[in-house]
Length: 634
Image 1 (cartoon, helix red, strand yellow):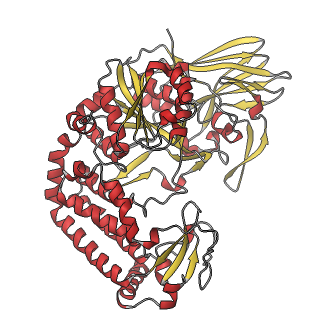
Image 2 (image 1 turned 45 degrees about the horizontal axis):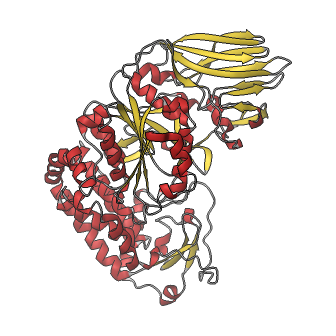
Image 3 (image 1 turned 90 degrees about the vertical axis):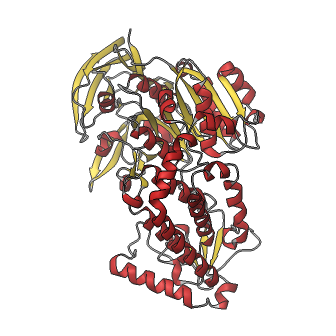
């Protein structure tokens, strides 16, 4: 009996921006090494249903697209499947052409079939030549009458290694509308629900999902599969740990699929991730890529890694992300044909085998930030890799309109990165981690951003207290960090329409694109020394304290520009208003001294702390420990 691994699908909603992710109906050319769309052959109106569309007479549509091409290299590398069958059901006359690519993105035609009337075309394709990368896809070309795709699917006769279902774990904090949309999409995806044992909605907010309009209808559609769990806000790690814990008690579940709340899902992607996990030769984590919910053809995360020496996360080929599929689709993007190995996957969507959790434990009690990366690193050390699987993705609110490095989350960025480094870095004293952390403090201080420096100092002090502080601060670290903001006027976003803020010298304007004035080498050292001395020795001009000296757009307010001024108006990341940054010599002196001493102490005590945290890790992530925290009051 064939097992359908991947269905050809079309968008759930009629959003024209989604066209390039599902089919490529364009003729492309290349101008100055850039892909350029020449002609459009099909529109969203040609989509007839979830799995069908019509190709107009004498037109051609390619399914060399993110969601409908088959990621052959990943199936060859991570599973023992060595043959795949493409089945294309059509009505009308035309031609089906099947292509493959290699790891360099070079396309090759591998089969062709003419069709007439109602036809079912099958193509058996070996998965034996995709070691470095490559996809398989098909094109449809209509004759002088319309050609309709009734259904397309990729299947195999190969039996899966595992047959269990997945429980889904959704963690939310005051995003009830998003959650109802997600639950509704799940309830309308019967092929997915066949693979789902339970849907755990862990509600940690004050605006309850159960009170949202539309919840009752979607609850009725999901029935007993849906279980809503209310608990105090313990962050993403607390919510996902609860989903892990509940899934461990489900005999029919072999996996838990973690999903963030502020997302829009593609149900077929969840189905694909579960099936892929069933086929992998050894248990492994199956992660999803992330598209921007507010700019839906733009891909922000493909394969993410943690660089060992600075111990910092990033995308592979960071300079090529985000990728906009409107500007270059799959056929025009050779990089996306390469098989890329990931160190971790964000928990916006990540499937974890329960066997992995039983062996390595649950999430670290980190609240937010680095809990996903730390878990994947821990799993890898135990022999369970992570794959970010192409064709498996969702839309998540991106970080374009955010700057969480300067709000209350700065505490968790700093603390959890250092804790993860203590747990997993193989480089003496974390390599460049401490030096980089010290530089981050310097940049914030020079930019007159004192609140994140205060949070980072608190983070270092907590790390130095030892691993038990993670449990002690789990329910309090976030509210305490937010409360601290009241002591720092720069955190206020000025939005009052009756009081329009102006600066004495006007807005500083710079050419768009990548900055060309970034200091480096000797110039960087000279700039840093002069800035530190100026901020230490010289008082700001009183006139600049009364009225901001200059104004910067958010994207222009870099760390090497702001230090030249006593005060500045800077646009908020989301464009809602402006922050006022003002130089405070006394605060600068105190915080600079604090930063130097704390980082010096961390460097001196790193070996001892690393041993303490590693020795404590089994208890920090144990199911019994989490059960006591999460269910102790029930």
